[in-house]
Length: 250
Ligand SMILES: NC(=O)c1ccc[n+]([C@@H]2O[C@H](COP(=O)([O-])OP(=O)(O)OC[C@H]3O[C@@H](n4cnc5c(N)ncnc54)[C@H](OP(=O)(O)O)[C@@H]3O)[C@@H](O)[C@H]2O)c1
Image (cartoon, rainbow, N blue to C red; front, side, top):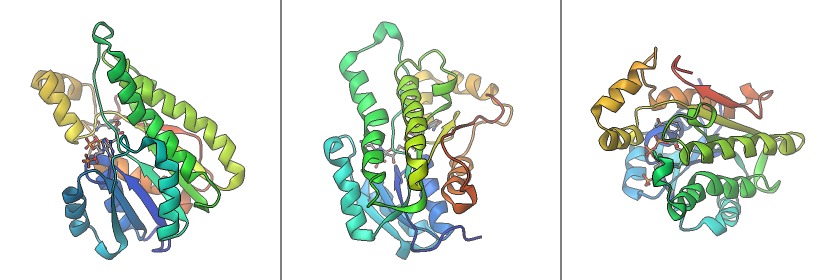
């Protein structure tokens, strides 16, 4: 079923992997034109080759951290290139597990730059009235750890909680201007991020974690289905939430 038209452009960050890739593929399959952003051009091209309509998939290679300062201008440049944007799905991000005993200020600041300040800068650019189509939406990947922080989440969960709080506020500001704002807060999803956590913490950590999920770990497509619905006009009365997707764990 088509939820979008090809005139509706959706910018997806993190489109080269995991959740962002699944979101970009599903937006494209449901009829939207996708602007796919990632650092890894080869993986973006590989996703484009597999999507439903490669002619309506446009790759934009970008390191969000390296160009943090100019992200609002980048969104404006994309609008000049493609026209006003319907949606933003911001899935680029990094996971990490920390203990307070090993807290390292410079590394925590770098992490907050990527997981909090980069989405703020993208929101700053997208929420400019000249850049979005009325009725559209921005959606940010937060995390269940923002709402239910556990051991190890003192940096990652805090950045995601800051993001969810900020976007709740931005949703209030933007509602009258015709832009909806969403966050999704998934628990564990099978992506390279989970593979990295399993590698650093061991197979027994992953097995223990999965045991907590009555429906098992999620798949990237489980998140994408919700993201695509929220970006569509079918969700026109929904804004300002941080939806937890927890497989029964949360
Ligand atoms: N997986 C989970 O269990 C889970 C749970 C809750 C929330 N989340 C959140 O969901 C989002 C996606 O996670 P995922 O599991 O899909 O991760 P992933 O498979 O590791 O993918 C991460 C994506 O972020 C991009 N990225 C990282 N740093 C970037 C930078 N500096 N500039 C541009 N792009 C950058 C990567 O691009 P390249 O590949 O091109 O480097 C990649 O496309 C993240 O925000 C994560 O915190 C994930």
